[in-house]
Image (cartoon, rainbow, N blue to C red; front, side, top):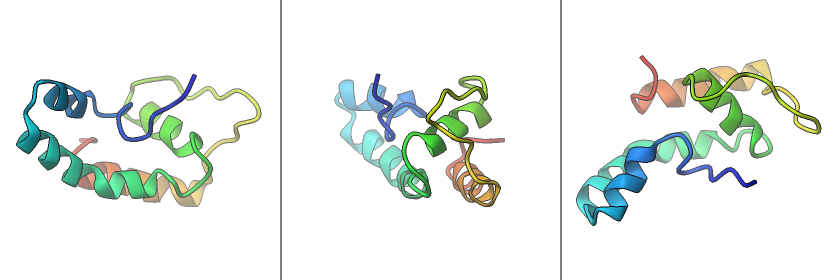
Length: 88
């Protein structure tokens, strides 16, 4: 299955868009733009899966051929998640 980078980690964006709440959806989208940018620091879906695990949405296990996110990039992705209010 595919991992859609822009939507897997924030269902509220989908809910707002489906409900026709364009203004709310755009506010969420703007808040998430830095996250989207940083989710491509490595090959997709490695950063996405790391972010989802960090947010408690899945476990940390990966299947080959995926490899763990590089430690240097963990701080980059975590910083983007925090800035967007996705981590406490």
